[in-house]
Length: 432
Ligand code: GAP
Image 1 (cartoon, helix red, strand yellow):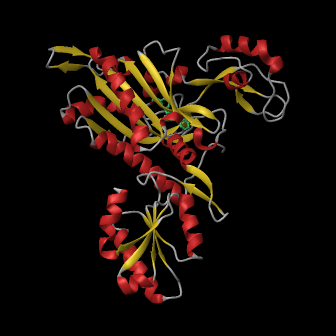
Image 2: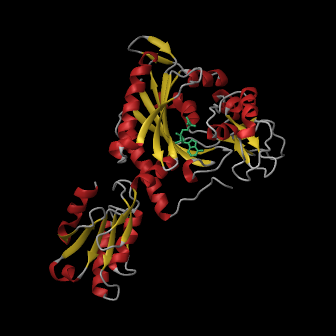
Image 3: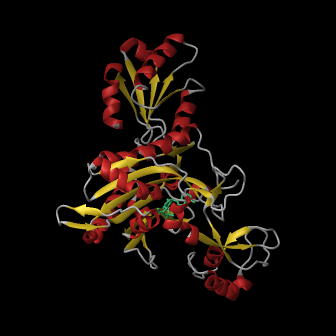
């Protein structure tokens, strides 16, 4: 059960914000991008067409001593030997045998490994198998984009979209990942955010470069990532059908690792689905008076990886002038789980509590807010700093006398007196 995680009350808010921002940036901003929510279960033939049944595997070795299951390419990489996870079994076995004497099990320290074998990552279900005899299992989807390919024709026919157009989907994917390390970076159940952009065959490089630039800028401008912590990784060994493949990598505490892949996939996916479904998936282009199978540019990222990146990017431990320390998550307001916290100065003064509740009830209509009357004000500020709440509002005796609240900024810790009547306008200018 390793590599399966639950997101708690703040985690689910942050994850929802990540998904909403992605969706708005694509589906709301581009008139030619539409959304989709396809089912997790798909016909087994989909996974034959996609190549997952034959090829979606990683090289597995087992430690005979402690029975840990490990990825051979990762063990080799740790001793500086390059091996590609897509290598055929023979090739990677040969490399592994050459270096076996240098490889130790990370769990028990022994050097007794089995041969390497290719291990398919698709997770099977018993859907519809009421007597336990199905020879062709139904899988949990290994990536969300296959749902887009099999809906491409329905969407084109029902929306009258013309090339170029995109279909965006956010949803769960499942993989029997061999190694479960690095927290939520690599999990067996995870969420993907995938855009498939359908284009004319002549537009491959132009559209690929456009999407590369858009996605790079998204991380910097929309999510607030420092560009020094991002880099491109170009795939040297392309799949035979691919025209180009680049990953955006983030500098995690454990090194630069992929958060998003941007791939020019040519017409491979639609051709495969046309072949396996016997349904024509070509497109008549009225501009060129031609019929062809569209090419695809894909931008695919994971909610969990973006989540982990945001935590790594925003986490600061600060020494304050009074000698104390604080932990603060400097999240952009758009992703912060809680936007505003509201505190009555004293919980045993009903007039303060009632006023604070009234303000809280107004603000919560627009933003995710939290009411807190527990502990002293300093402690309440620290709690909100740790979860990245951009603004905290204190209701005190000035609120009752002069209609003023204190608004405290998370990053500068500066406090301002704001008239309650102007509070929504003030917060809108800061948060929206
Ligand atoms: N449709 C293309 C595709 O699925 P991928 O590189 O396997 O390509 C795309 O996955 C993205 O999905 C990755 O960049 C990563 O953000 C996320 N992802 C993939 N496997 C993951 C896993 N086991 N755990 C968490 N996120 C994962």
